[in-house]
Length: 235
Ligand code: GLP
Image (cartoon, rainbow, N blue to C red; front, side, top):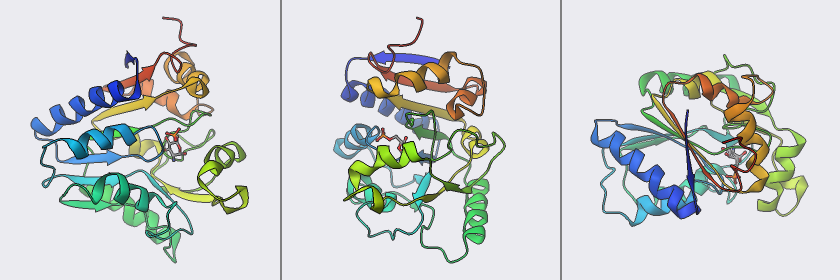
């Protein structure tokens, strides 16, 4: 696990974008993408670049259950606003939060992941150490699955909704094993709220209590943090 400390999110986005570029130049064709406020600066850098992504397939980590692609708080809508409507890609995959049969939907997504192995996965980090929507306690062996969101994640995401009651209680998320299958992983974390999760991820024991700690066992992970997020690290 390589840890890179940056001064600002914009700097972090530039570092992440260079890694994306290197991967695509080396022949990578599939990007795993994340939502949340953390990757916005990266998507901004991609949008304002002259780079051509028209051969690139994207696969998103997760989606709320019960929200349509056109709902302003759905992750599908988020991706359209921040990236997809500005840049042409080959194709996009996101979980369908309105699927009638969630079991069929999770296996459809697992098949997509088998068919399009992810070359580089972009990740953010939850305050409790979650990646994607894999909350503490999720099995490291998990593939795409239905998740009951924890109270702390619901609270953390409530700022995007009218109030707490409007935050969906469930999501579909790629599992930990699905994330670990990506050839390269680039995780960004900023701000003091992420400091404890960063510490657990980088220096803590590898435990399902801190889902991101499994990344210590991946051969090619770059963690990009600002000084606040890095503030509990020993080095
Ligand atoms: C949500 C998303 C995660 C994201 C996390 C942190 O729970 N499912 O993919 O990493 O929020 O969000 P933020 O980047 O806004 O702090």
